[in-house]
Length: 168
Length: 205
Image 1 (cartoon, rainbow over the protein chains, first blue to last red):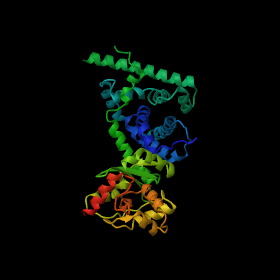
Image 2: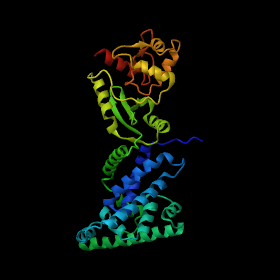
Image 3: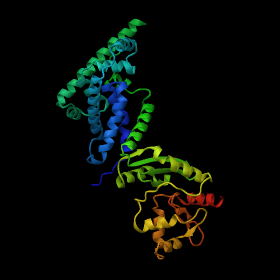
Image 4: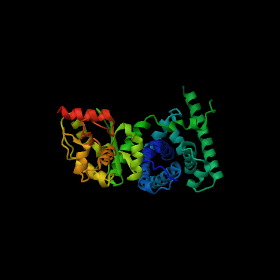
């Protein structure tokens, strides 16, 4: 069987938006761009050796996860100055929940595993079987992490909506 | 309180309003970094000309493919991925010089090209024919038979026709200057109208 070799440009066009959303959900908007760049540069380097018929989305998300770990480590080495944080929290709380910053601050309060499970399943659209492979757990644990995370996000949203309604 | 939002609606804000522009910027950064790291095996861009939109593709060695829209640019890119490398990216930078020269050619400001060419898509007799085509000067024409003789095989008139029809670098390697011995233009990889446009352009210089 001959498999058509897709130009890497197609991979970037088709999967670029999803990978950006996954990086945003896992790392936040500020760090997402770097993670995206590192992911696609790494992927492009390895692309000619990718076995035919591979699930490209899962492959990219796996690379993105590795890059996210690198970023978490880098962030731990260079912590954000503390005095900036409280101000941003106050600002974020006054925004509507549909705002990107508000969604990110809600995601940020989740354990990393839940955040990742949500990003890989609900944003990248990978089945829980694939999500479990990337997270290194099993299918039911991956499903539970995503469900718990979504529940917490809903609770957070309701709280903010109540705050908004009360404020106006 | 509206708690009936679906999961994807709840996560809707992850699609940022500036996503398209961010992705364009990230794509440009990726092309530049891939070039620096030496993994941009095939760079391409398109250019609008009087003979339609041309696809230009280059390896690190030089211009490797010029393709007319009727050749189907997507198909051409897939073929480049198969025959050269799948590391293909839209990266205008590497094609800037040739794009300018093509623009000058159609604007009567230039009658030849001096960008590096990569002939890896052409082998054997076809390659020899391309070398002969480059000897035909701007504004001149030659017959298929004359090119066959110049390439060392006077009987290979049909093979010269095939070499022209499969020329990976039309416009830059001037297969449009090869015409029938009766003076009519003959076939062309970009279609007969494109051939006529190029011949008219060069004769009105």
